[in-house]
Length: 100
Image 1 (cartoon, helix red, strand yellow):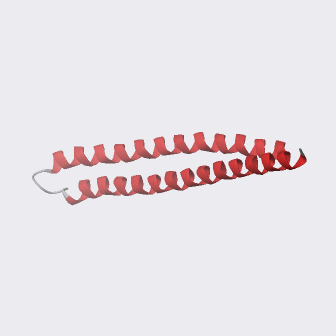
Image 2: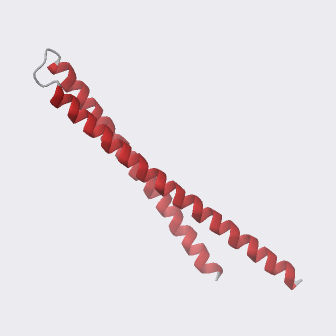
């Protein structure tokens, strides 16, 4: 009977570790998304600056502003997702501490 309890504890510990690895993976993904959206914002500024004195200045200014806003929105959504997973990680850490 003792052996079965020890195996169940081992399985529970492995499950908690796999959840923790998943959360860390999601954190890396969110940080990568933020990096990409920063590059999108830079592209928006580049569009505005590159076409500053051309016949398409107004059109490219609007397009650049749209791209910048898209990048900012993407960063905000990524941060929101990160906070969601950070809360989940906090509850995971509490459950690990309670199991000890």
